[in-house]
Amino acid sequence: MTDEPLDLKIDYVEFASPELEATQAFFAAAFGWRFVDYGPQYQDIQGAGIGGGIERGALRPPLIVLRAGDLEAAFAAVKTAGAEITREIFTFPGGRRFEFKEPGGNAMAVWSDE
Image (cartoon, rainbow, N blue to C red):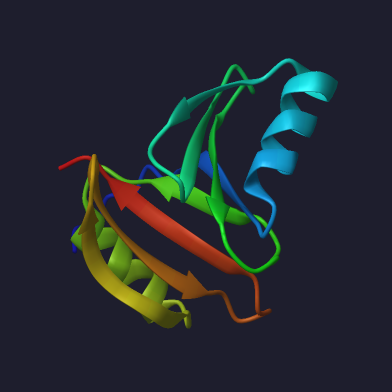
């Protein structure tokens, strides 16, 4: 890890819904958002002012996702700062990410396209 501050900014908000189609229809009707279909389990949100998605699954609070240029440095920084790592670095279509809980209990993630 370098002495340079990390450039981590909120980049994405991920919602979970047991009724993905109903949530998608609501977001479209209420907010005018559009969607990219990534299969029956995930819809990417377009036009919301920030990146986002809806994952089919049990209801949970939205997941705030930050973007990092150096994922390993971000991982080390949040771990050193006291985060509980809930999912180690993994690959997904479009990049890599890890998930954690900050000391107050909020679930968050950091991703990189590298």
